[in-house]
Image (cartoon, rainbow, N blue to C red; front, side, top):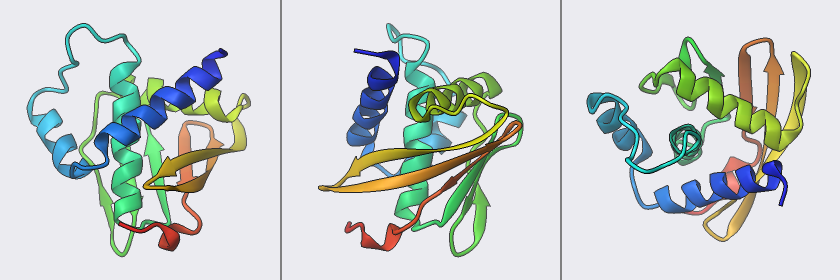
Length: 146
């Protein structure tokens, strides 16, 4: 199995595990706890969990997109734009690196797609990278049922 397939599978597993929680609350609690990683997990587990929670929050809020910058954090563009708790930059940077590996974005500027299964449906996200900023567009969000 290639790393890309493995990372995609692991991201999907994180999303599946987090479906029944309030992602923003989990992020806020994780921030209060000092962004501690679970004992015995590999170095990619926290960045994958972070990306899953950010994506789920945006999806639950029916956001049209989210912007992720390793230094500025995550901004979600829903009815009103808001910023999620800012994780350590190395979590964000590694999470973005994993997303780029999954989608095949290799240049400083590029675009790729990420397909996720959410509640018996699939969602195709469009990831655009321009230097250090990543924009994740969520077309067709209205078709996902809670």
